[in-house]
Amino acid sequence: MSGGSLNYIYSRVDSAAFDVESRAETPLHHAFASHLRKVAKALHDLEWVWSSDYGPGDEVEAIRAVLGEGADIEAATERAEKALADLKSALSANT
Image (cartoon, rainbow, N blue to C red; front, side):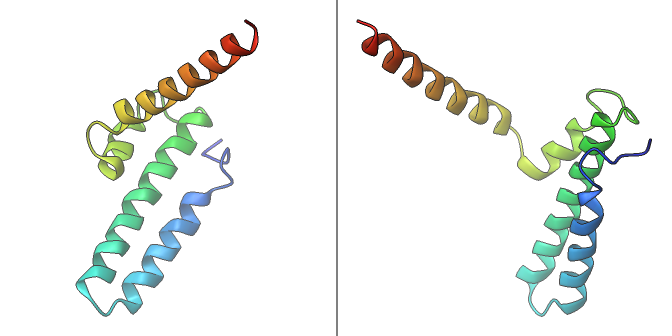
């Protein structure tokens, strides 16, 4: 099926990266265009995994290139802390 599960959003992000790069006036603009290209690659790979064109895990390297090491642990920790707060609230409401 070649993607589609995210409506090919990666192509719009890649197009934005091209536009930013073509109009870039500063090193920061160029760096941002490069970042957008990495985001587009991660979106592409994730979309293709979700569309069963790539296998599970084929998106990990591209996502890590955007987020860096430890982002998954940080996100999991934040979700666990939220779940714990919700649990404590529910328990206190039922006592």
